[in-house]
Each structure stands twice: as C-alpha cells, then as structure tokens.
Image 1 (spheres, each protein chain N blue to C red):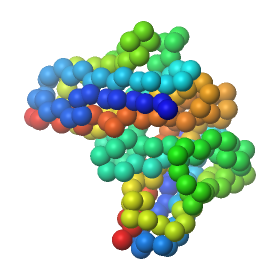
Image 2: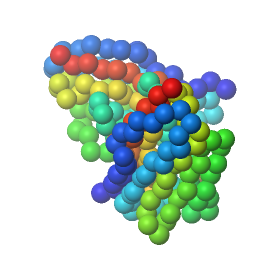
Image 3: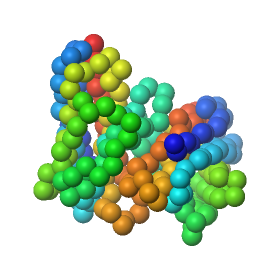
Length: 114
Length: 112
C-alpha cells in the first residue's frame, strides 16, 4: 500500500509569486484535503476535494485554489504569496464521502516566503 | 466555529513516567475525535474515538472520550525517548464534510 506523498519537500519563494504544491493520495483513497500548519500551531483546514470537485473550504482567501485529477492526486495553488503564507503545507487523504474521518497525512511541503 | 484546546502546551518527563494529555472541544454535530503524533512533518494517526467507541488502547497508549465533558485524554505509560513528539487532537463534525479542526498540540519531551 502506497502512502501519501508530496512534492516538493521544500520551497523558497518571494512575495507576490505563485506556487504549486503536489500530492498523491494513498492508494484506494479518493478524497484529498489540504492543511496549512504555521510554526507552533496545529494544522488548519484549507479545502477538500472529492471526485475532482472542491466540496469543503476553510477560512482561506480565493488566492488559495486547488485541483484534483482523475487518479485522485491533487494540487494546491497559491497566488500572490504573502509573508504569512510561510508554513508547512500538509496533504491528507481518506476513503471518501461516507468513510471514517481518519485522514492519512503526507510528509508536507515547507514553504518559505521571503 | 469549531474549537479545540489542548493542555498542557508542553511537557517534559523522564523515561518511565506516565503522562496524560488533555483535549477539550466545541464542535457542531460532533462525529469523531482523533489523536495524531507528529515527529518531524507528517502527523501519524493514533486513535479515532466516536460515540460508539469511546475507549481505545494500543500498547502503552490509550485514549478515552468523555462526550459529557466534551473532552478526551491521551495516556502514555512507561514513556520512552521515542515518544518525544507533538501530539495533536482533532475533531470532525457530521456537517463539516471531512474537515478536521485541530488543537495547537502538546509538545512532549522525554529525557533518558
């Protein structure tokens, strides 16, 4: 069974730039969620994708957007980067609507915005 | 708005000690409470507690859900240095389409 993978591991960008982070879900999982974890804080829910559509969103502005592909992998895009976007971005997958709430996390992408 | 508060924020113990971590929550239409262990990056799943499963145990770790008090505890007995990590508590609501709301975590440090 393949676990959740994310790329890249680390990324450094400057304010105003755009970034794309990638996630492959655990095999058999069709739902992907993205979380932002600032230093010293717990993860905060950004949004969830199921069947290639966003079906839940946290308190994040529209410059945070995403995609899910037919193979259930996903991308998180952040436009017009701000210094406060510096964080660990975690992707999590689960079995889909109707499955348990247990989400399995990838190793994350550490984003630094200068 | 859903809310999760963990205590203490940090804890330092010696190997062999027993620790109890606390989690209290407010969530609309509670469905589940989950505990995760985060060592470097990826939170790893420990337990999920629901109305139909309020106690879980795995080895030296155990957890109890108190739905009346809207809280949960995570116990670790005979701690080892490998237990050093951040322990995260999260709750899911029945109407929140898979969103988990996390607490800020408890940093546990176990000294030899």
